[in-house]
Image (cartoon, rainbow, N blue to C red):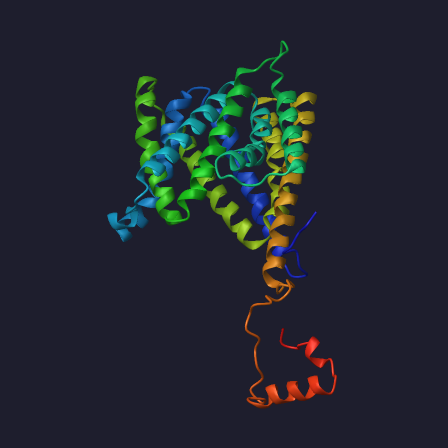
Length: 343
């Protein structure tokens, strides 16, 4: 495993602690979603998640005005919001009908699906070893879902679709980040997803109690805090290093779900999660190796042979004498002209 930023100082420890805290926040969010969707429809819960998640961006929007949202890629912002709405709807519904640990285990296929989409949409070069890791991760997902057996779970399929929508959304974010700021991307996401999630929420509307509103506010807070901690973890230490601690979400969710709902993770889920986590870690390792090679190649000067048609550099302390010396050397049979030092 390549950990390019793991040094003797505390950056590695800080990055690990940030990612562990982020994993804890995401685990709490998943368990809270499963808790509140027992009484509140998943589409209504998704609306409040988007609404409460948009509130922290209001001060930024007031400070920057509508000019902060100026963009020439509104269609791509709308697509990103629509994909996010699809991911959230599938995820909330999956958590409402399926054990939380099983949903989170399937969600770990995100880097695997992102690799596939990068090859198809962004035209990234994906070689045989990474495709092998993708195949192993897919097998792990099938072990959890078991689509051909009597234990077939609709919630597991929805969790897989949620992850696919997330991977597509991440691909659009990569494209948007080339031209738009992070705050603008997040704000546009909320501005698109909140109205999109309102009509289905109204259709299934049931006036929530103050306690349910509080739980849905906690869902938004834990989700936003998890995202902030995730970004800071990636900035503090190498991504391939901190990503290891993100997989703690599964035992965190398993422990919380066991305490709150008495849910026990079955052997198939642990086995499939092991395959998915292994393949995701390998993909992260390959990304780190390739990034390190690219940096080294950029630093090392070229060793290509000199262009024979290039004009050789001349030494400033030998302005006119060089030609005469060369003529003298050629008359005396000296071969020094064959090893031109400036070539």
